[in-house]
Length: 67
Image 1 (cartoon, rainbow, N blue to C red):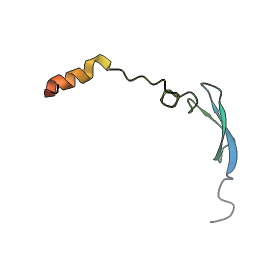
Image 2: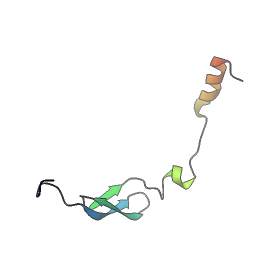
Image 3: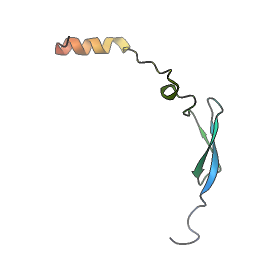
């Protein structure tokens, strides 16, 4: 690698704007703000809802004759 052309890689702090959780990452930036993290994202917290929106599943099943 050429010397003097690469940014300095360092341990930095990432902050979640939704819940305020802070965690460390490696990056060339000093601080990063993220909208959601694993602490507040519905998929990771188990609060994710699987809903049948507008009967799409029933419509598909009816269209293709699936019982």
